[in-house]
Image (tube, rainbow, N blue to C red; front, side):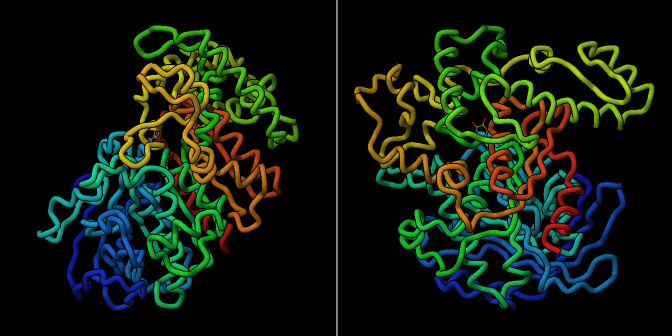
Amino acid sequence: AMGGIALSAQASDTSSPASGSLVFDPDAYNKLTTTVTDTDGDEHSVTYHFWKAITYVADPVDATYQSLIVSAPVEIDGESVDASNAPILLANSVGGYMPSSVADATGVGAGGGGGMPGGTLPSGAAGASAAPNANENTNATGGATSSNQLLALAAGYVVIEPGARGRTLKNSDGEYYGVAPAAIVDLKAAVRYIRSNKGRIPGNTDRIVSAGTSAGGALSALLGASGDSPLYDKLLKEIGAADASDAIFATGAWCPITDLDHADGAYEWNWGSNATGSGSTVDQTVSKALRAQFAEYQAGLRLKGLDGTRLTARNYDAYLVEQYLEPSATRYLTNLSDSDRTTYLASNTFITWKNGKASFSWDDFLTHVGARKKTAPAFDAFDLSAGENNLFGKGTAETRHFTAYSLKHDTSGATAKRLDSDIPEVLRLMNPMHFLVDQPNQARTKHWWIRLGTNDSDTSHTVSANLAAAAHTLGDDVNHLYYWDEGHGANTDPGDFIAWIAKVTG
Ligand code: DHB
């Protein structure tokens, strides 16, 4: 089987099609068996009940996306398990703020975990619609043998995978119906569906742990931060969401592409001096102006870092180096064999290795990472060409500006003098920082797992660190590490995440 995961399915029941009712049918499952390879390389046989796509709202705009799948283990390595009160991993597969569907999924791990912009998935990961051998009762469910979903199932947790609308969806009237804030409204509706089915749906509905990568990580963080916020009530009502709490217990976010209103400035603060992939340097006047915006924003946040320092644009480089980057390199080097470590250090002489600890400067780190992934501005492009311009589209407008600076410097022929009046509210509905800093949301998740590859220049390293600092400042439990030399979408410690779920939900 592809990616080392074989899933043999025997139909024991036929699921009935979604009906518009929001009552979960506990009996409408198929019984499937899959083999999960754990992080030590050991194989486990997992038999589970699988509920194929269930529409989670009463008035769907597009049920292809507004549906979820449920997997609940019943037997692991020959031993019966009872998952009726187990934690629920709510794993979204949103990537690039694109549409994400589980409509055709025939088993757990539908999305692979972490899509890329443009809808493609990391090599080896199967998309939701890619179930090549489903009618042969064998289904390749994603190449990531250690994906969160599979490991969670093998740990005895319930896995629920929601689809969600995304930015490119357009109806026959030419209207974009998956632009912001559609995806977060959908994920909240999925949570409401789960909680309204307490006692019918497997798992402990008070122990929902969200997970997602990149845009999906941003949405996961937002889901955690904004739990039960009344700001979404009207939108949830419009799609017929269940009448229940949408607060979740814990949040996992890998490389969250979030805080989009401030991401252009943060990006230049971080990567402004790095050349692009084609070797050119971005317009330094633009870069400098954006960096100044970041300094003002960061000062206004008044955040304390995990070490207690007040974070500013001036000390943030030292903070990232000391709090995250050096410990990340130290962990990486500690886990190498002596000879591999020697080889690595010989080709990375910017690292000083002393008493089992790595140290280096911020500037040398930036040189080590090399080319920045994006041009300037990274998110609100002057020519409206960034994915985020589409994310903030509206009605028949495929793209819009969402920052005053980029509107002012527009090169697309936009004639408006100011941003559309709805933009501030849409930005607020899309940004977890608003629920952590301005007016801390009491119903937010209190447990945060945040991860980011040190080579990831899809956004600024301050974005994750600010999210962590904001949650930490509120007294929440924050577990945030950077993966050394890893790029966008990395998840190199999924076993630790699964163990963390047991710890925080226990
Ligand atoms: C993703 C990546 C990006 O660079 C971005 O701007 C938005 C989303 C992603 O991989 O999901």
